[in-house]
Amino acid sequence: MADSGGRIDWAGYATRWKALHAGYDPDAANLPVRAWLKLTYQMARGLARLGASPALVTIIGLVVCLFVPAIAAQRGAWAILSGGLVLVAGILDGLDGAIAVLSRRVTRFGYVYDGVVDRVGEAAWLLAFWVVGTPGWLVAITVCLVLLHEYLRMRAVAAGVASAAATLAERPIRVLICALGLALAGASGFVSGALAAGAGTLAVAIWLLLGAVGFLQLFAAVQRDLG
Image 1 (cartoon, rainbow, N blue to C red):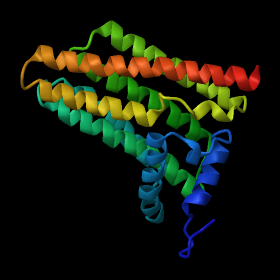
Image 2: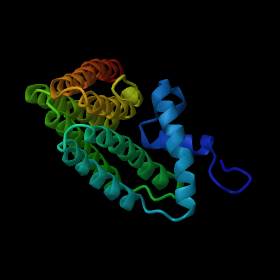
Image 3: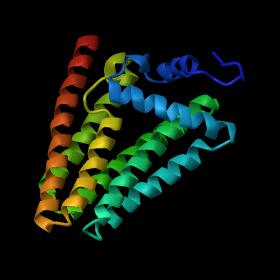
Image 4: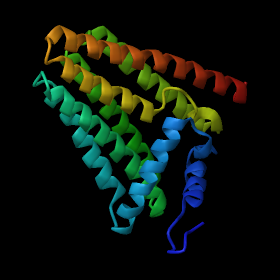
């Protein structure tokens, strides 16, 4: 559906988004995910009217992600800025897909490319936590869990499991945990490096815990729908 100006309204956008995500209804998502999707939809409408390229937005998002650990490596308050960059990268990631949907430029290559960029970006974010003092083994386990979670989701969506997008470890939630965690580590750095490392460790531990719960939710959904 379109509004009075000929632009796609939320209902029309949600219908297209649903068709691209194994029938999962964005209006049925949990509050953080639903709010995130509506925010990116509103921002993407303006960019789509300006003719923005989804691929270019994806590339810019990747570059921003790669700067996150580099800036966090400056230590101290720089980690606050790196947390802000995570938030920017997360918004850009939502925008590229939304622009593609609104401008009818969704492609199979773009779908695969976007997924790869997302995983590289999240690995860069977790690397930033290691830079501020989070134990390497905790970061490594969390990276592996993210990859496993998204691989299971990919296989589930390919098999037609509509509930494959409904977990406590969705990307918007991971973005918020990471952004807040790095910002907290940066603020704690004004006190001591040990406190900054502790704040980063706490954030990654929360990410890992929610990731484990999310993986179990996803696994249960796949077993229920395909078993």
